[in-house]
Amino acid sequence: MKKIKVKLAKNSYSILVAKLSYQEIADRISKTEFNKNLLIVADENVNSEWGEYIRKPFEGYKNKIEFYDLKAGENSKSYIELNNIYSFLIDKNFGRDTLIIAIGGGVTGDLVGYAASTFMRGIQLIHVPTTLLSAVDSSIGGKTGINFNNRKNMIGSFFQPKLVLIDTNFLSTLPQSEMISGIGEIVKYTYLSPDDFFDFAKSNLDKALLNDEEVIHEFILRSAAIKAAVVSQDGKESNLRKILNLGHTFGHAIESDLNFEIKHGQAVLSGLISALYLSNKIGILKKNRMRKLLSLPLSIKLPSKLSALDEMNMINIMQMDKKNRDGKINFVLLSEIGNILIDVQTGEKDVLDSISSMKESFKKDSL
Ligand code: NAD
Ligand code: ZN
Image 1 (tube, rainbow, N blue to C red):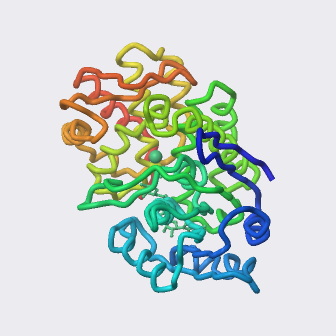
Image 2 (image 1 turned 90 degrees about the vertical axis):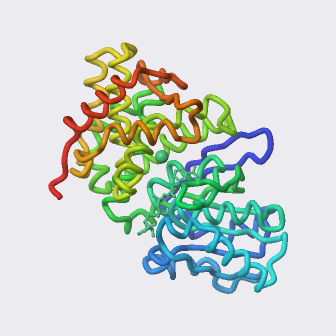
C-alpha cells in the first residue's frame, strides 16, 4: 500500500493507493477516529459493476449504515440531486456524527463532497475514486460543487476529505473512453514536474491504453503525488495551484464549443496541444522542445469532431471565463517541463493560430 500525504495547515489527509484496498475500509473506519454512522453513495454504473464489492466489507456492520444510489452522469451535479441527498440524510436520521463515503467518478465526488461540506455545517467525507480522472485529479484537493443554470461548478466549496482511498481494482471495468479521459490529466502532470515522468509516460502509453495494471498504478502514484504536492503548497488556488490549469483555458472552451460532446480529458489533451503551440508562438518554448513535448498528446487518438472547432467562438468563450477579467484571457503556458508560467496574456492572432495548429495536427480517431 502506497501512501501520499496532503499536508495542509488544517485538515491534512492521506491518499492510499493499492489494489483491493477497499476491502479493508470497514476495519480502517473502526480503528480510526472517523465517525461510525455511514452513508455510502455510488452511481448506478458503479453499483451495477461493484454493488456487492462495495457492500461486502460492511456485512454485519454494527453501526448505522445506508446506501444511496445516484443516477450516473454530469446532470447529477445539480441542486435537485443535492436536495435528494439532504432529504435522505434527514429522513434516515443522520446527524453531525456521520461519515459519507463517495464511491465513484468526479461527478459523485463533487456532488457528495458538496453535500458533506454543507450538511449540518459539514460532516466527514471519504473519497473512493473509481475513474482514472477522479483518482488522479478530482478526489484530491478539496474542490466540491454542483452545476447551476447550465454553468459548470457555479456553486461549491473547498472541503477536504478525511481520506482518499484509491483501490485500482475498480478501474478494471472502466470504459476505454474514460481511461483516455484520465490519461488527459496524466499527460498534463507529466509537464508539471521536472522528473522523468514524461519519458516514462511516453514509453508506457501503449500499455496504459491497454489498461496495464502496473503502468496505470505508476501513473496514478506519480500524478496523485504531484497534485498532492501542489495542493499542499496552495490550498485555495491563489497562485501555484493555477499550474494545474495547464491546457484547461483552451480545454474548457473546446468542451463548450463542442457542446460537451467530448470527454473532459480529451478536451484537456487538445488544450495541452494548443497551449504548447501557443508557448512556442510567443517565443517561450523552443521548436525542438515543443516537438518533443507534443509527441505524447499527439500519439493519442482524439475525436475527429475537434476539426469542427470554431476558433473565434472559442476566443469569446475564453474571454467570458470566470477566471479572467476585462476580456483578457489568462493562459497557463510552459517554457520547459516543470517550468510553468501563469497569467500569461497574448495577442489574439497567436491564440487563433495555436488552435488551428492543433486542429491540423491531432491524431484523429476513425469515428
Ligand atoms: P463521472 O463521475 O461521470 O464518471 C464517468 C463515467 O464512468 C460515469 O458514467 C460513471 O458512472 C462511470 N464509472 C465510474 N466508475 C466506474 C467503474 N469503475 N467502472 C465502470 N464505470 C464507471 O466522470 P469523471 O470523469 O470521473 O469526473 C468528471 C467530473 O469531475 C466533472 O463533473 C468535473 O467537473 C469534475 N472534476 C472535478 C475536479 C475537482 O477538483 N473537484 C477536478 C476535475 C474534474
Ligand atoms: Zn481537468
